[in-house]
Image 1 (cartoon, rainbow, N blue to C red):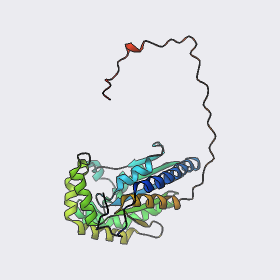
Image 2: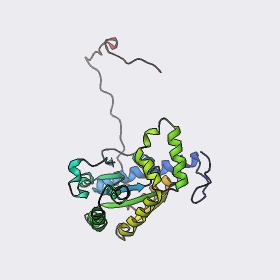
Image 3: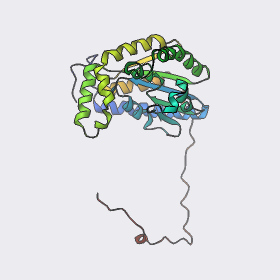
Image 4: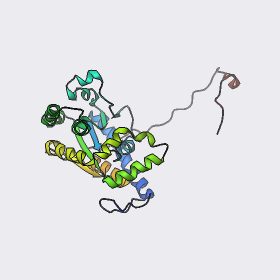
Length: 269
């Protein structure tokens, strides 16, 4: 897709060649970060929030692509169960926090309460007020326990969101990304903006700040966000032992079974 006249910063779209080259460099650094996290027993939590179609899934995918999924986990919780609705609000998120040597990426997080739940009336005023009151203390507790916490708000304009929604509607492989909730949220754009501003007012703290990422150009946004994350973690490259492949075991008396006895799938390609 070419340049969108509605781009917030009027940037020229980043070309694919430059993007792939720079992404490759950053992903190498992400692997180094992973090795450092594992060796040092560090715990990292990264929250990704933003409007529908802001690019949270694509951002997370580019971070996790080169990483070991046993170390780097993605958490994208669905609608709370009836039991979870009776629990302390933050309780359902606590089990997903990292142990030593782990990275956890939240595709939406406890900030659902300050966004969709607030705007759509899925929580009461008292529940909303209580969340804004306890959230800074909760995050400070995580940080003081040793967790490295990062909060990213992926920012797009209403015009750019419309372009992406239309692209999803026209693409059979992306239509699943559109939900009735997305359409309702679209019709409440400025109510969500007000909710975001109020959320920032209470939770953009010195110890746990929000970082805003311009993702009107998704490629630029991904590179800038990953670069920022790497710049704010004091990781060091962990020396790796050179791996030498051992010689293949001799077959000795083994005789391979007849391959024709096996059931192969049809070769359609």
